[in-house]
Image 1 (cartoon, rainbow, N blue to C red):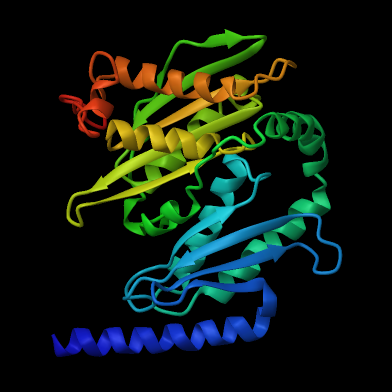
Image 2 (image 1 turned 180 degrees about the vertical axis):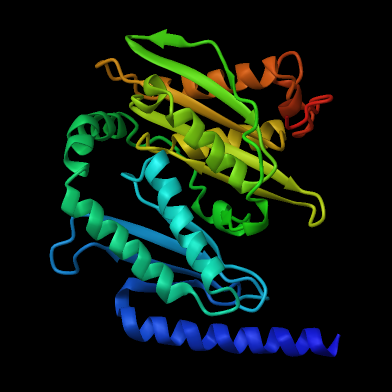
Amino acid sequence: MADSNQGNGQDLQAQIDEVEALSSIYGDEWCVIDEASRIFCIKISDDIEQPKLTACLQIILPADYPSAAPPIYQINAAWLRGPERAKLANSLEDLYVQHAGDSILYLWVENVREFLVEKSQRGETEDHQAENINITTEEEEMDDGEDIPDFSALKLTENAHLFMDHLNDDEIPPIKHGNATTDRRSTFQPHLAPVVTPRQVKMVLEKLYENKKISSATHNIYAYRIYCEGKNSFLQDCEDDGETAAGGRLLHLLQILDVRNVMVVVSRWYGGILLGPDRFKHINNCARSILQEEGYIGATGDEAAKSGGKSKRPKNKKIK
């Protein structure tokens, strides 16, 4: 116990020193969200004077970081899509493995900055922004005044992305594809996979993006919940992929239905006609439908909400 307390004390001092250094280096870009909970955020851009690309790196420092645990992190950037998100996450993980036991945040921040500079120089964002800016902006205007829940704090406190380098040998979980639905030329299709580690989430996304039709979707919205039995808590996260607030709503549905160890991705191909709030209805209905088909919820899907969030568990659903 004494050794453990001594170790925690050394970790805390290392964290304090690291945060002070980062605050000094990055100034206003560095933000303390909750000092007591060790939650921080830094705004990173490709160019300080004329930024073209910006990302927000949110960090939680566990009690045993840096000696025995990596930081818990989340990267927020509307332009950061599946394959690129996975590529950046892998590069951060490699850095952690190479410098295990050391303070890593400065290396992470500069790694993200290098990623932004490289992407900015390639100029790959221009076409993507041109394709999606009218869709997102106009539909956001249609939702003006609508009550959209903010899940940013939830995703941080419930553990966003967590590095687990010992899970390299995980197999890709089986992916199920649900029935597509079309409304005013916009098509929605759900995909589902059982997941028990964050690495499997990345593997499922990478596998889906290998499909040309899925990778060409205007948005691929996803959410997942993984139950950590030892800690009696959930590891969960979501992604809008440019469809503002859709990921948070999808995660909220998974929470209401109390499903676990599963991720749901909903692909949307925009058809040129604005759907307004109806698009959220279609996204959640698609998700609910495939969850029901795969046995994660009861016959109606409303049973969980009526019973306070309790739902049926899938029987004999194992990762193959």
